[in-house]
Image (cartoon, rainbow, N blue to C red; front, side, top):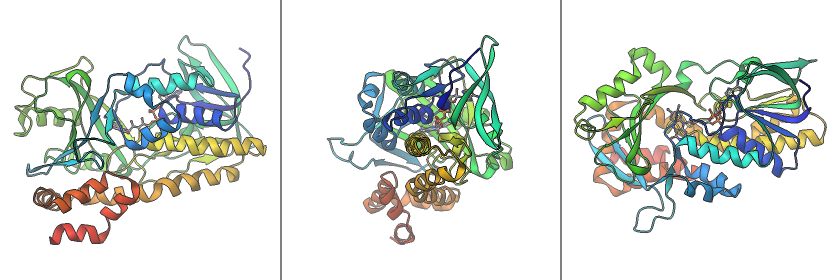
Length: 411
Ligand SMILES: Cc1cc2nc3c(=O)[nH]c(=O)nc-3n(C[C@H](O)[C@H](O)[C@H](O)COP(=O)(O)OP(=O)(O)OC[C@H]3O[C@@H](n4cnc5c(N)ncnc54)[C@H](O)[C@@H]3O)c2cc1C
């Protein structure tokens, strides 16, 4: 089948790919194709929390109101529990008083991602149900890709630049010979939807319970009485402890004294417990080459402490679009001409990821976590430090400075 030749073909219509498409259009690049192997709306295994960072980019793209039109739940803070069972509630910055100026949103990804994809679809060509299987090359430059429709029809598409926005197991990354993350830089997590869990509030809940340490068990409130529940920890730790994550989640719900009453009458939906991986940003992955660029999970940009990846996926789409537009204008899509994409992206997210990596390692030491949460119950000052960690990058940096951490343990 004869195909049109594109300036840019984006593989993957999730938050990274759809954002790249919309930002390319803003940068004056029109001849773009956005491909996905699924048909939208499609599900994505996730905690469904859209952070302030994601909503900031949605605002910049002028689509924030779309998120208020689909079923959603506003969240105002975090309920933490320590391995020994102490609990503390910490409001998000701006949500301390009666008037909540900066709530977070929990929106099922089947709805949230569909907003992004449908908006992108209005601006660029799209092709759904098409699984990309390989890249084509000429003189060490990517020149296009090959793939297959669900009907079995196979064809190639030519492009000056290919964007790999195809998630954690990126085919584009593999075909560009990028190594997968080592187990100590990859999280594995579950997700399941339940109805009938009691004791819910407008907090997201992160529980550092013994059964999953050094990871955590989460409960996030959703619309209409549903909740999103999961457990997650580093693949290296899962292997060390030989954990079966589905069984661990079921055991926490059935036996842990903090949850067994709350889940006593809860029902899981027909999808059951699903498992997926999170390539975290503590591993700075190669993300570009001659004629190709990686964004989002394909580029390993997930926050190593919170597991939040949508915000950085959208951020990477924004920066990638800027440098792709420049490269096309200069008629030079070489690796060297994409080096500034990597530089600007990591200047923007690098220090936050470094801080989160420090927090991830601190959180793996049980007695420190117990002490930290005990102190937060007793002292407003410590609560403020945690609130800062949940805030923007600068506040987070300050909150996890040696001085702040010393303050927690010495006060
Ligand atoms: C259990 C779990 C909980 C999480 N919780 C949160 C959370 O609460 N908040 C948060 O911000 N982040 C969370 N994350 C991380 C978040 O899900 C990812 O960071 C985010 O989805 C990255 O977006 P993306 O566009 O890069 O990739 P994806 O959303 O994975 O999109 C990739 C797209 O590429 C398509 N694709 C893949 N391969 C091909 C191919 N060969 N050909 C064509 N198309 C292809 C897929 O169909 C998909 O649509 C969680 C992750 C997990 C696993």
